[in-house]
Amino acid sequence: MTWVRMVGSSEQTVSVRLGERSYEVTLQQGLLATVGTRIRQLTNARKVGIITDRHVARHYLKGVLRSLRAADFHATAIVLPPGEPSKSMPTVERILDHLAKQRFERGSFLVALGGGVVGDLTGFAAAIYQRGIPFVQVPTTLVAQVDSSVGGKTGIDHRLGKNLIGAFHQPRAVLVDPQTLETLPRREWIAGLAEVIKYGVIADQAFFEFLERSMADLAALRSADIIRVIGRSCEIKAQIVSEDERESDRRRILNYGHTIGHALEVLGGYRSLIHGEAVGIGMVQEANLSAHVGLCSSNVPERIRSIVLSAGLSDVMPRRTFRSLWSAMQHDKKAIGGQVIGVWPVQIGSVVIQKIGRETCAEWFRGLHVRRSDQGATHQSKVVRKTRIARR
Ligand code: NAD
Ligand code: GLY
Image 1 (tube, protein in one colour):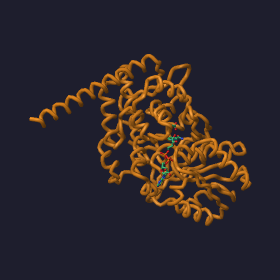
Image 2: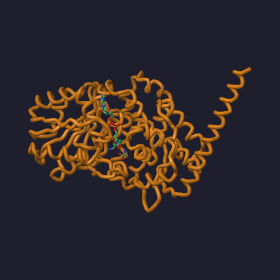
Image 3: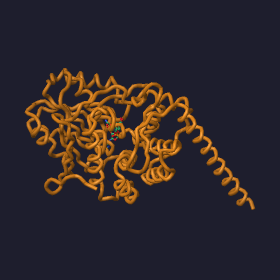
């Protein structure tokens, strides 16, 4: 297995190779203090706008402003309410208003300081303001450090579908400071592990096996391997994006777990499940569906379920009707002509991209409910047995 390239003693870089849009992902503990000089190496611009949210601002905004000003930037900040509902058109308008009022120009930079919500939003605002201005990703959640900051997918949600409005717009650099994860709430940390597991399933069996061995420690934040985990995840993502920037084919594999996952997020009104939690359930259920149609043996969903559970994620489908689930899956960008293009594991480390029709999916879904009521019956009979024993 190849891990990230070491530069100097503690800095690691991963290249995203996209011709003139190429850039580096740089990982270093404590990197935040050097954001100003690092961005200065990319531009002579004066104006920089930091987009962040309230939680992240509380911990990191002052330091980043200081670093940018020390590097001779005129830096201003927009602090947004945290959470998925901010990934919306009114928030984009708010950002654009700020840029126009502050007279941001074509060469002015934006900095996305935060998780995937801030990153997707900032990238989208940068993509459309004056037909495109440069931006830098400074991700502060595990989801953002291993996934959303790399690859140039930017956008916002629509009531009917997640990420329905957006643009491809690559950042000029991704600056990762793993130290920022120390302040991340535990729920967000666990959610990020779902995207890490995804890379093992879609592209790297050895990485998956390493995760199987270390997941309990990673989930409990006891592992010293986190930089290795972030690095390898970025490396896999960079490789896939370099092969297929605009998701015409290979990049679709990154959507594993997201077909059902996005549908669950939409059906929960973006409130009941956070992104990584929905992806965790989606990965297990899509692997079950893959086994159901005979694309993999039952051992594959079992291993995926087991690692998802050991990360502290759930594998349980929230109660939904098939109709609502299928309808939500139809609104996803992955649907074509009434069919859904899914990503199906064939073995650990390898997936296929294949359309799935309504009937096949409905048949699997009916089975899911039969199994669930069987489990319910087993659980009930255990309860009855226990009660009887207690009465004796
Ligand atoms: P998020 O951005 O909502 O952040 C989660 C929470 O953690 C927020 O409350 C935030 O304020 C807080 N937070 C962030 N960093 C913190 C820190 N260091 N310390 C304390 N609190 C911190 O959620 P997320 O999971 O990072 O991102 C999810 C979003 O990313 C979704 O909208 C998803 O669609 C998107 N996404 C995009 C891509 C892509 O390729 N563009 C890939 C994966 C996910
Ligand atoms: N997270 C999916 C992608 O970047 O393509």
